[in-house]
Amino acid sequence: MKNKTGAILLAFFVMGVADAMGPFSEAVRQNYQLSNVVATLLSFFVFIAFAVFSVPGGVLAAKIGKKNLLLLGLGLNAAAMLIPCLFEPGFAFLLGCIFVLGVGTTLLQVAGNPILRDVGAEGKYSRNLSLAQGFKGVGSTISSYLVTAAAGFFLLERLGWRAVFPIFFVLMLITFIWAALLKVEETKADVPPSIGSSLALLGKPFVAFAVFGIFLYVGAEVCMGRFLMPLMKGMGVAEGTASKFGPAFFFLMLTAGRLLGPVVLHWITPRIFFVISAVLGLAGAVILMFGNAMLAPLGVLAAGLGYANIWPMLFSITVEKDPKHSSELSGLMCMAIAGGAVVPLLMGKFVDSGWGQNAFLVPAVCFVYLLVLSLWKEAKKEAVCA
Image (cartoon, rainbow, N blue to C red; front, side, top):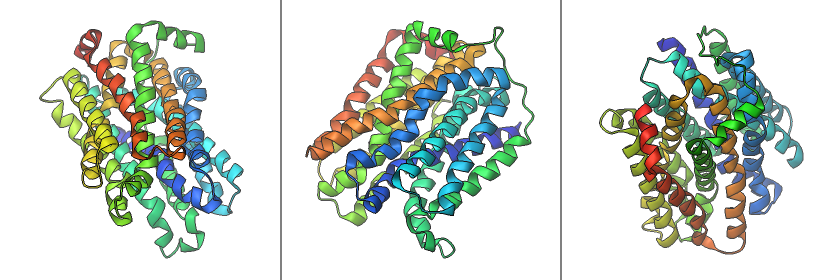
């Protein structure tokens, strides 16, 4: 069981590569001399794939199996990372590679979240999913660091800003081989799903509200990864300090929060943890919006810890209610990751319009919704199931 869980946790780790496209956007913006809005298309092309392929991916997972879908996603990601290793692409071609990465990561998310329930112990899904998100956070943190550090590696320095792609390719390949060796007994639906039946699940109120919550949460997270560095420098934070306490510190706190999540869930219910997370996430955005250079690291700290466990709480609460439809629910929840494409475009527009740190209003509003959702009375009924 541990070997099976290990392979899935590694798959979650490589999902973090997609999160690195936010910080990577700044290097691409400088290389191609782009505006903030155009550079944000890098994240857009990753996350818009979730809107298009998540629900079909959930249907496909139910038909060909979650493991096979996981392998398909890893294969696409490996191909997307290999091409920029071979030559320097134009911006449009790079966006194509990033879109393929988005498709592959979509399939990884759709398959990985429910398959973790199949390989884990009974009654441990919320904790295991929180741990898996911790591994994804580790992947996000390390990937974000590699975006700037890889060019300094002796064997890769000649690739310049593309130096990180060979590392990402090798990670995808290793994960593919390990996952291919797994034998998994998968939970299956009694009736084969369709896109229509999957979308029909949105008729259940908490499913619909939870899906929209994921949309806003992912959008807010990508906003942090993309805009923390430039906006902190705009507050008067020195570049070295912004480098330490910007996106890298945010993803570090995400990782720490997600790794602590399974421990915290031994002591409090998922519902209470959801409320605490939403309060912290909102506080972080407000501090960044109204604070100054001295308070900015505190805002990043609060945001990172608050953002850390929103996804596993919402996802596990929803899936545990109806595990036989786990593939379809996973497709719907992963479809909402498209928020990572849409919400940062709005924040990018505000930044380009001269809003400065007031642009943190965007993630603040997202977390107002999440706080209300965490306090909604029906959430309490769902949390019992987690």
